[in-house]
Image 1 (spheres, rainbow, N blue to C red):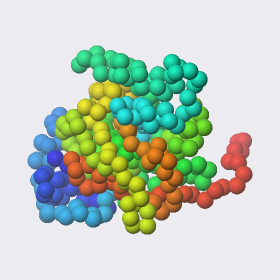
Image 2: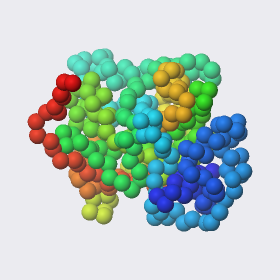
Image 3: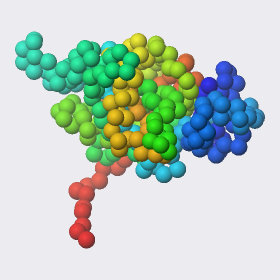
Image 4: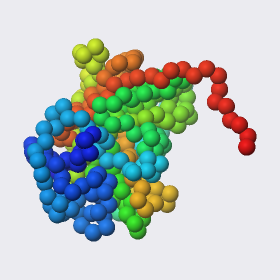
Length: 322
């Protein structure tokens, strides 16, 4: 089952190739909270409400597949160096230390994941790299521009999977499902010094258009591409899923939600799980007007966003004393 939201306010349920409007539903958030409150699954809540007219999702005007009524209570976060192909791409961005036996901090982190990121069920594994991206004000709907700030050095795509979670009234974590994500970052800034990773990640991000409800396939395969002037400018296979990662999803989820601050009732979380495919690693310099397209057949409609840059602001940000 797949969930999406259209800009006309409809919540849509897709089962197989058929998509229908979900009756009596204000939002995906309201649907999920109702399921949590009732103590049953999303599928049971959908069945209870019933389905209406058929919708053609090809070329539909999508909103975010889920959002919070108060954007400050939606948290965008992520983990990196989690995929088996990601170490070489990330290491290429960081200056290598002298000597063949000396590992960069990125490679050390990746090695920790290889050695301890896949613990037995119920056990705690190695901590991953973790970062904060922003709140709901940084969440960009499918089809809208990913706008880099005026001071940005780069605006690059990061095609990955995102887990979407809602926190119940009792503080328990519930996974709504999985979505395609573009975790949009500034790789030039990160390359200067890996300690600037935190700066490079404070950018907008997009996810959707559809949420896959239920179990995630172990082997997720798709394509990440950049279109320029309507033509494919760069394209590469996109791999994710448990079979292609150095950490299990359960381990990554634990190390995010182990913090009390991330288990506040009513909050919504969109957590990006990392990537192994970057156009930046292939020497691509993106430019305003480029369109990022992330397509995985198992997730239905592709995620598309174009790149834009905000105007540069002269001077410094002024702070006044009260």
